[in-house]
Image (cartoon, rainbow over all chains, first blue to last red; front, top):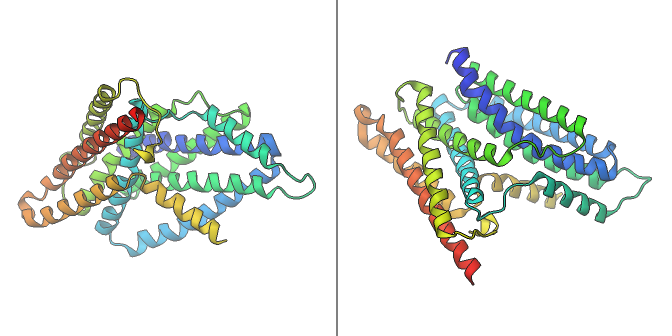
Amino acid sequence: MDLGLALVVAAAPSFIASAVEFVEATTIVLAVGVTRGWRAPLLGTLAAAATLAVIIGLLGVTLVTVVPEHALKLFVGVLLLLFGLRWLRKAVLRFAGIVAMHDEERIYRREIAELRAKGRQQTRFDRVGALVAYKAVLLEGTEVAFIVIAFGAGGGAALTSAIIGALSAGVVVIALGAALRHPLTMVPENWMKFGVGAMLSSFGVFWFAEGLGTEWPGDALSIVAILAAFLAASWLAVRMLRALLPGGAEVAARNV
Amino acid sequence: MSSFLRGLWENTFGLLVEDGSLAVGILAALAIVWVASNALGDARRDLAGWLLLVLLVALLLVNLNAAGRTARRKTSS
């Protein structure tokens, strides 16, 4: 994969997908910082980043050095399809009005109310604040790791581009969050999640088939055709569900 | 510590599986395509990727249709 194609195929989607995760983590860290002070959530964030670095370092080195290339592609393909189709399903349910749209402002207010209800002792280190930030950053960071693996599974330039895309997203989102001190509600997260779900699923199909020994026409460019098929099916599904439930419903995604 | 590890496991598992039937369907589609790619032989192995795409798109539509019907039943009752 040449550098130009790697940037288009890996860096740009990695930036968009990772930005969604960084926005979600930033919302929680902001909520903790605003209600309980900044020391504990920042320490929790740093601890989560260190944990992630260890996990990614150990797993990444093991995967790259021990697992044969075709087996790695199969493994990454399976993970991406489980992860991506779950995301795409939820996005379709949201756009069909069956599951509530993701709302950073609502999540931020709910977190603040919950954190205030827990109270705090002023004199001691705020364990609750640190733990909430740690869990949020670790969970969203794990998703970023999935995303980097997904878009960088081609190795070499693709992996470097995916890492650059994810790191750039982190820098942009954290800088915006620090400057605004408010959840980044201007980011069109629901649309981004829709696109990212379709992209992850497309990469999952691509890598799994490559792991089986399939050669795609046009190599990585065939991902565009796969993506078009998933987007067309999703559009069809949204129309089908709107016809089925014209008034919509607000049910939890795991309950339907 | 055990509750923290359980929470970590549930979060990681939740990243991949939200709807059990969708996850099982994906794994079944992958198994079918794996068997088919071996049965097709080298000359037709390149069809395996497209077969996987067709199976997954069909699975997504069937799963979402079922989800819509469940939601309609829940809202009407």
